[in-house]
Image (cartoon, rainbow, N blue to C red; front, side, top):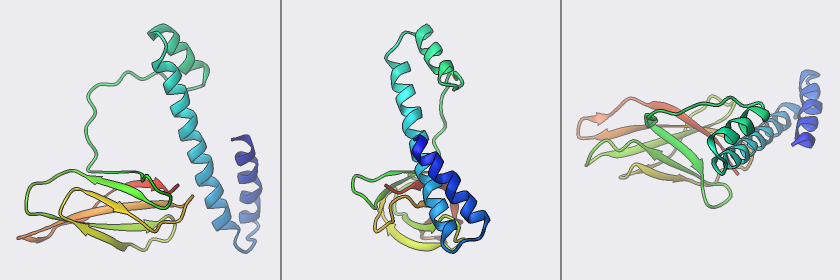
Length: 160
């Protein structure tokens, strides 16, 4: 992780100096650091889960994280997680009833251009053909007998 942070710092300097192609490289490095942090958080969480409550709290605090007790979580309208294969992201929308088509769109981070990535008759959809280490944003809407609904914009994932 330290190597990725150092690389990010160097690429940030190049981006600030407006070197050609530096912003795209910096964004890729930033996404790698975010993946490193997610892995670190999962590692600390696994250690805490295997320990007693008192020891778990000490592990979490010593890793500079905050101990949070969880109540009931509300489900997000759209979740994006890594697919089983490189270049894929699994999308899971909140199921909104029968006879509905779920239309999905994606946007590569920083482009501000939404493109269609597919339609499904189920709330689950696999986005494919994505570039590793790029952050993608996703949204969906329902199409039914009443026509197309409003876009629900809410999930992102860094492709692996």
